[in-house]
Image (cartoon, rainbow, N blue to C red; front, side, top):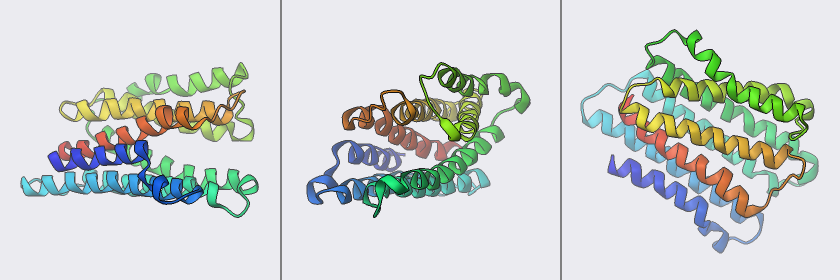
Length: 232
């Protein structure tokens, strides 16, 4: 568990301190930084799976699903990080975002499937709580605090997935609960902040706010999910 925690925290420190920006100037520094940070939470997940094997526990489908989720999230990070280094960033921005969102959606869907397998409840009972986050997005959209435009329906579906992940995590048993629930809360916080920065009226995408409100909770959530691998 110590190695899993250490690798997860390395990912958090890497995205916060951005050592790659000191070595590589311009957009390539940010691109390399995201790749290195994402590789750390993938390695943390592998370390968690290795600990299960050392304890004589089976390499079950839940472990495989979480590891695949880390790989998909890493792919999503790479696609989003490509935006500044594209030949025509302004023209291709929406395309890069869409290509990055799909792996993230699939990664969260895998996380949800794993958590639902650990919940001794009818999944339909989780639906009311799962609707809270997309309902919040819909209210912000209706009040024009957010302007989703043509991307509104896919983003509301994405919000439903995040809400379902949060709801399922709340009903898992400890010790999985100790990692899955805060991770799900951090995922929801990160994506909500990201939506406010991208689709908000003022579109305040300042680097400091993005790092602390989007990147920090996201990478910390991935570190926690890597620890959850040990207990699935």
